[in-house]
View 1 (spheres, rainbow, N blue to C red):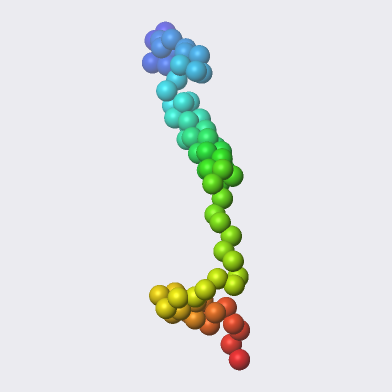
View 2 (cartoon, rainbow, N blue to C red):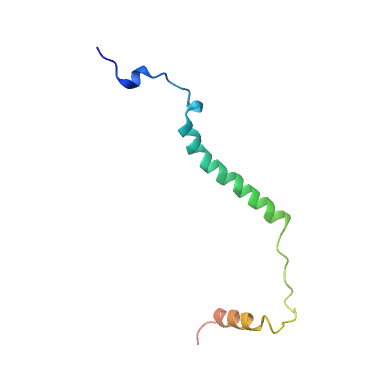
Length: 74
C-alpha cells in the first residue's frame, strides 16, 4: 500500500511551524504598539489652551472658519 505524501513528513510541534508565528505575530505587534501609544499619551499630554488667549492676525481666519462650521444653520 503506497503512503501519501503527508504521512511521510515528520510532525512538528506547533511552535516550530512558521505560519503560526506569522498569524500570532501580527496581533501581538498591534497590542504592543497600542500600549506604547498609551504610554506616550500619558507621559506627554497636550497642553490645555487658555480660553482667553490673545488672538493674532494669523489665526483669525482659522478661528472664524471653525466658529462658522460649529454654528448650526439658521
